[in-house]
Image (cartoon, rainbow, N blue to C red; front, side, top):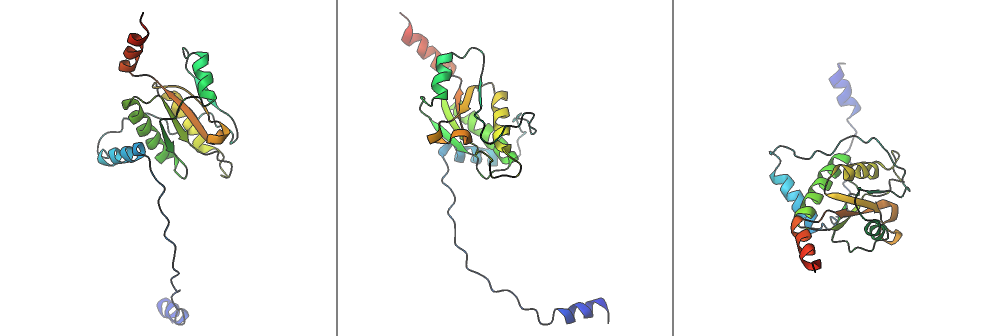
Length: 188
């Protein structure tokens, strides 16, 4: 008997498995910023990538580490208010269940859009990574990416009620127009 005949003989009594009905799951709700960022990314797929965020991480962090960063020149009181969650979060980005490559694009698009819309405080939910065998991969990458972006003045892990070590408050630079409004407002 040749191989094909042997295979046909071995498979003669095999029956297909019955299909099992599966529940449909609803996609998580997306914020307007996320939807706009995805739409722009899809429309600009043929355009050159201006995203300069790194695709490697030099400083991994642990899942439950509280992390923070502040650029020189940011007032201590401003950073203290950010750390304590005293600024209203104007938009948020949820990176749960994303790959590093997906998160890189989403973080870039989200922060570019937030800056264009003159938002000051945003939140990025990256997760702790405590259930991942690889650890806090997204958390480590996000911490590094935010330091590469000049529009990011500071960031700090969120308060426990808002995600704790699995989320970051991010303080963005004021636009030139907002700075001018402040100058006019506080001139005497």
